Image (tube, rainbow, N blue to C red):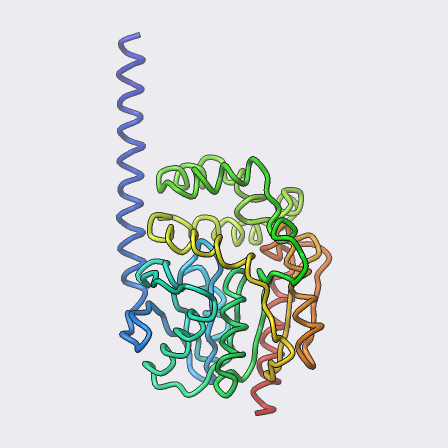
Length: 317
């Protein structure tokens, strides 16, 4: 018993040391990969890549600028200048008193001012979609295109529960896993599949059926949540404002618009994408039959749709 106890203590110590090392490395890498712009709307963390027509790449819940790094990279490789910011309450962008999608949209415009950019397209991923929409509504002269990728858009007349289905497991993950750096670190290493249907909102059978590269892409989104302590304010704010505020006046958007989702997204963003495409004049809608919230199995198709659309929107300016 004594030997077993000693082994348990040693093992626990090694695990904790590994966790602390990973936490320190993650914090250091996140800070090294971004800059802070001191804007008229307050400090905003951001990262820039590429050159060409500017595109704001707006991350989803649990993210920060790093969540959309891969999207920024392939857009930069396609001759666009990408600006990935951390939204209110994420990483080094503080949570202001007014953290509504409209206020966040104004902060997007303030960031462009600080960077000397007159206009930019907006690509809103998941919970980043509401502020992308508001950016194009509130600053139409500065928005040359809008992309809504698996958009967390509340549809008027539809209950919040129809947008983000609650479940005991999802609530447990939100309350405990997403409230602890150690819990998210341990699960992403020991049992990442537990988070596929909750955090990634993708059917588990779709995840298991996907190619190894696509599974790794999905897992990288989950792992990016760590360290969640740097994103807790943003997560709580997104839970308050994203699915409870229906987006109105979509018909006033004049920018070319592309909405993309999947029919089996467990966050049910297909409804929001369809609603946006119906309301925004001339908008295009692409719905994949499978793939979940991470559009597994359709990454090449999504990339091609977005790049082709943005190139067309650029040439029509």
